[in-house]
Image (cartoon, rainbow over all chains, first blue to last red; front, side, top):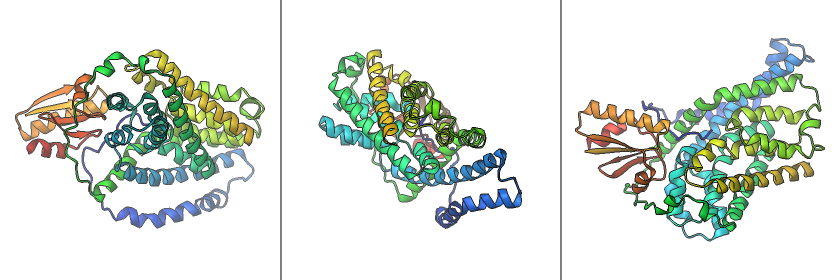
Length: 349
Length: 77
């Protein structure tokens, strides 16, 4: 989903900045009356049969789609504004000279906040290495940046509730911190391509631009247009499949495959998740429906994390600067972390 | 004037090059346009996000796609 960099629209649109603020109360009203409204529409206006599978599926779809889009727009807008305060250059400066463990914690946190796309992974990696930031700290950043992103959090919050979203974010951070620390301890410097160390990065000759708050609001708009236009179709397809599962798949169907009793469901979920890539937007709604049918939370979390956090295209890009053994170490350390999280949550709940 | 587009061939980088070419054409500024794809040269500019735009060795924008109007303003100065 963070496939490529943020882009401004070619034709700058004139936006009246007070409009979003006038819309806030309206959005709140829609959001809080959505469920009743949809119920009224489905049962009273369309007069659909309450007990039928189709009605259930339609109701689910009509309720979840607007809910997710409202949340997505609001959160992506806010995150877009917050991100305008951060940049990879500032992050690098903040991480310079930080000791290993504290550096890992900071890198994971900054990984969440700094605007980052996989296409910039190479200059970012080299930039970090060049200014002496330890590899382990760099990896904490590279794990946290894609794994904890606003789209995943919005979907988790909207479809699973705030507890699951918080659980995902905190365990994701923990995995980023610990795996970066472990990789740092493994002395993997020799697995970085030699030429990376020979690069002499220049000093950035760029004027600090004064960014007004209006510009930051503009950045929020740009983020919304950029992200929503890219993923809306996956969300709708995901919710449609989720709705079908919700209406038609029998209760407890998933218990035997992805349930608690099946201990192997966690590693399998991770293994399937690594090559599957990025369409968290489509996968999370389906997962919610599966959870309802008896899949275990830990297995579901593990699956999500490996889909979002470990992506094949990112590995292919990183392969240009780090050697295969380090790619393998990177994947195995993070995958192990994800599995531990999966097992713990299957065990707790 | 020398305009350098820094990027390793991602879709946004190509779009930036197109926009720059259009801006140069429309303003009639005398400029050499170069698309720098080699990572070592890109790093020499000190940027950590691509695509980036440099005019006469000075980085003007990094990590985003400036609008046509913005680029015209940048090369007009």
